[in-house]
Length: 172
Image (cartoon, rainbow, N blue to C red; front, side, top):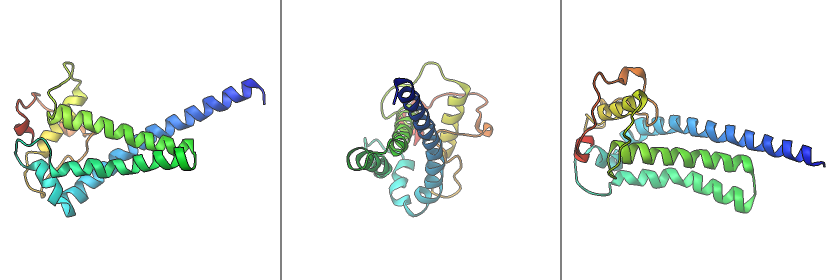
């Protein structure tokens, strides 16, 4: 095979794997929304309730969801890199990992202040996402909640005037 054919094949593989990674990332928002609405606010409210309760603990029972949601990515990376190499499935694992990373940064750090850092420049979209999450946490029960997404919020959650909650307990 000549070098030009190999380079085109490599770029094609990179392109396809990039599309798979982005598609998986976007699909995982639906998975997170569905799980949050029907599982966390349903059968597994036992874990998730800790996240809707005002407290000053570093960890919550709800953090077990992070462990559970990391298992598919870890399993995919392990199996499809070490046991049976498949770059397309590695791209799926990467998409799930990237979603988890964005979730950690947006949800745990920016919104809930588990680490003291907030971006100085906030787009209208970021403000809308944070505001939607504040609305979600205005209820401390599993019923009658709204805004279950983590990285997407419809325009109806656009705040008229945006301000961050000052203390971590205000975000719970």
